[in-house]
Amino acid sequence: MINQATLQLDQVQTLENNKFQPHRSGVQNQIITSAWQELEAAEIDAKQIPISSRCICLNLDNLKPFEAVDCQYQELGVIFHNSLAIEPSNPLFSGHSGLKVLMGSPQSAFLEATFLRPVNLVSSLVISSQRLVLSAYDQDDNLLTQSVLPTANLVNSDSGILPNQPLSVTINNITRVNFCCFDGHFTLDEFKFCFSF
Image 1 (cartoon, rainbow, N blue to C red):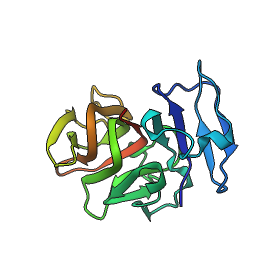
Image 2 (image 1 turned 90 degrees about the horizontal axis):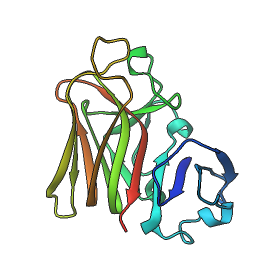
Image 3 (image 1 turned 180 degrees about the vertical axis):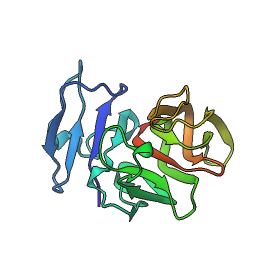
Image 4 (image 1 turned 45 degrees about the horizontal axis):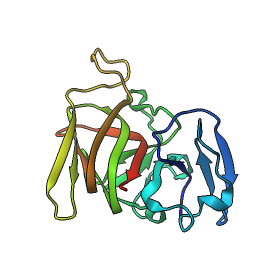
């Protein structure tokens, strides 16, 4: 089953001219456009758009609270491991764009995403109670690059880092990423990735 996703071509998302259109399978896809041409519903089909030219932002609000997230977005090219959808009851972990966010579970402080084809950008808005490390790996499990949120950024904390801070990695041939927060908790919102050309 595919949940709602954001699809755009060749550019990083801007938040202008939101348009919702039904997909053939009955699932809605949110198209974010600005200066480029809007796509018709038929053009959204992955068979018609080269996978090498698209960026996707997952909309988590179609997930059920406390739903284990693994293969729901497989047809969009990503599988999650150790991931749970939640509606945070603790306002310190409030999401940015909707009610639901992802967190590591059942093993806390860890969440992983595997891509079915290589990507060159992975990004998410994060809130963390501790230092958070995003690591990117290639198909041979070699560490390609890392990005670090150096300290906690909880809502209403005295941290110098705002909540829902973007954390991203950009490098060719990413096939897996993991988020790791040692001895802490974190949430992800607006999980985005772009397929490599």
